[in-house]
Length: 298
Image 1 (spheres, rainbow, N blue to C red):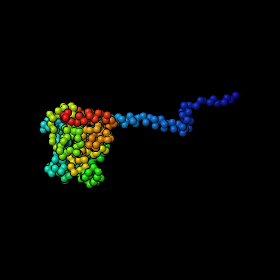
Image 2: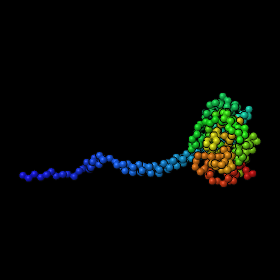
Image 3: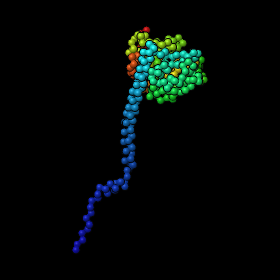
Image 4: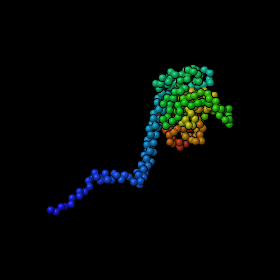
């Protein structure tokens, strides 16, 4: 009887996969995979970062809008806006324009922590000096919750004194003083904007109309740390910690530290007198920018 050799069956798919798996990936294949991953990451990460910044900008505008509602609510009750700063009895320290808004922002837990009749650095105000509510911060500006205010140097040419006065809570939203620098004229209260100093302003004084006047703007902490609470006027750039001026333009590197800046690329957000919030481009004409910060044409 003739014996036939066994018929060889073609390898199954499972066997082929097992055979190929034993070989693994070559170095070239690994490098190709890494290159593809790198290319995809370079495409996706900027888009993801841009989306996050867009979300932060929306959040920033919403916070400013809440301040606008509180300012209008305050005006309805008192017939004027809060003053840029309000002296305590010794007139060495002053509280800013934001503390009077706390009841209108439903932040009684914060307003109950300080005594406006005492000096800012006194014991009754110890707790509040460490409170930096998220509502007063821009989500794009990551900065410590407090900063140290140092004694002002005798002259511009003098070195910093490095003498600490007190720690203050950080904020990013400062009132519009107008076009002059707050630090240069606070004693005379010569601001030409809505928060012109220790004297309150009412809406009828907005001679250019509420929709044509800037009320509150942003300042990043890297420019100069700002606060919502108040200042010791012996401190460096004291009034500038509460208020800002419009002269050169938003985010200008050559501008004074009292001007408005932000972490947002190409713009700074502002609250207008009528309560709306819009970004102003870094490229805005400086003459138009200055006019927007003034109550009147003159």
